Picture 1 (cartoon, protein in one colour):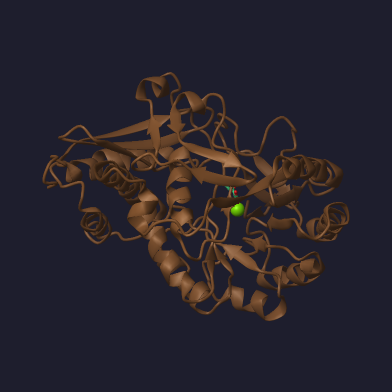
Picture 2 (spheres, rainbow, N blue to C red):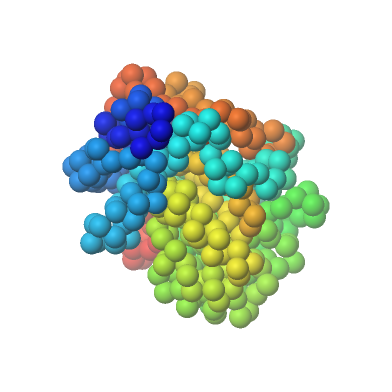
Length: 411
Ligand code: KDG
Ligand code: MG
């Protein structure tokens, strides 16, 4: 118990809202009135996390001391018996982040100060350039460079395929921000068509922008290790900052094959939930960037643990920052990114949209492609429950991918 404030947890609220897209938000309120918020959004499975939090986690938190972040983390991790897993770890993450928020507010300090203080001025980001054509993608990249971004992810539609990861076939919307897809849409995939078209994107990008701009690309786990090795070699002349999710690595050993063949730096981790998912990738130095997000890998406590381990092996953190990561997650990762000695880069797609801005408030600002963190105590982010009530949950799914013969593939 704090000497001056009663930090006994008295209320735990779970709010599922859809201000532009679905988010699962956790609010923990203490007896003294200080509250903290956390993000538990698992894209396409929001109600599973909400019910886990509401039915199973919330009752265990009432009456506990909000200061005991580590003990509560262990209690929810070891105590659940069913360790790890995306739903469990997103719930632990939301509790963890809300408790760091509370601790910062009690201390009167931003969370990065509690972690050990700033290691840098601000958090460098990379932005997304997508397009139906190479020219369209590069036009979009040029606009981002003009805004001050120094690192850009490039994705272009694959000729002959209607809609690919990062680019929608219907051209109507950015790939993640549909407010509702009541059933999973299907998209075709052909590794041959992709491999035949991808090099030109990076060749033309280097011709147009020169060598100073950092470039990344997300394969979204669609290749086999030997195909990824070939892609890495093919892209070596264009000096990527990293190639992301070249291969799904439930079998972490797969990355040894890629590593043996190419010097293109490798990044992975946005769907990982714990350090165990990436332990071999990191300790064998098969990757260069670990992309675990606070929302999906056990909060600030979980990602800090991964970051410290990764630092021993020259692996830097590059947290996931797609539209399904709420402003609460951005704030948590900005505080972590300011502190982490082995911070690499933060993915950035904007802090939200006009609708989500009515629900989430925060003191993060973007300048010259960097996130600057304000000095508000805690995370510096808040959530307006009344405003959120105007945007109820809408069932929505991510797309699925099939080969042209109908075989289900990684999306
Ligand atoms: O929920 C899935 C998205 O977050 C994911 O498709 C985005 O791969 C992604 C990225 O790197 O932003
Ligand atoms: Mg990705």
